[in-house]
Figure 1 (cartoon, helix red, strand yellow):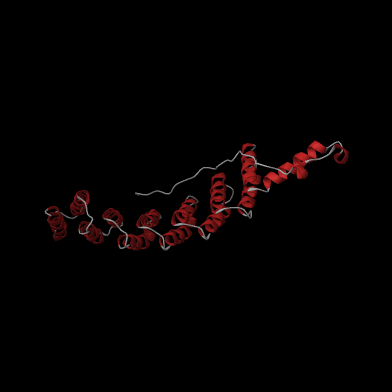
Figure 2 (cartoon, rainbow, N blue to C red):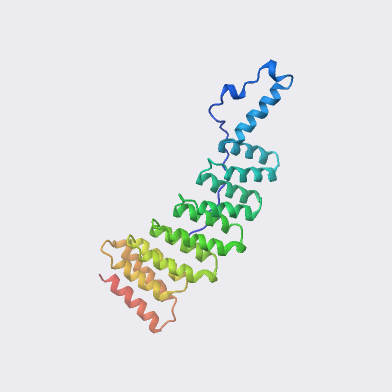
Length: 264
């Protein structure tokens, strides 16, 4: 597979919030009694955990002390915090997944990140990547996210191809859906010769020789085609021909097309 799903590590933030109100945290000797330091420490801890930065720090402490289940609970709280950003939700999903804190819990956060109003094709692909790592039982939901990323209005050819290769990685049951996205990327109004050739190779990997040949030819006919693009188109067509039976009309047809492009 040309493109692979990626894995992320837990991000730990060790920076304390920059300021705490003195009136909120100060405990006088007269009012506090003998346990004033203890009470003040609890107050500080609660204030820290009430912020995304504090939650990250607390999660790190829990993981280091072997309290994985509590860390997962806090990550869920972190993702549900009113100030949690799209990045925070995404990070919480990945962290729960990496900690083995419950596949469905991670999936809920990945889907929430993918459905966030600020989600870009890259963020949705990232959410699909996280879900992919959880195994085949989630592949249908992965496919839905990949197609969602490819169908956003601002999806570029490369975004659509990433989704197509993601579908390809899910196995033969998803090849037809991958083929549709390779075609979509190749017909995108901003598609370059490089984009179209990448789609051609993807189509070939799916076993669609005629579609791949069509796209190689299309890439060579664009106004902004370069000598390198021409060479790649010829090489791609000859590679397709080499996989056909020697002496067959199919092999001759692909070689003839390569010859015609090379002669320009």
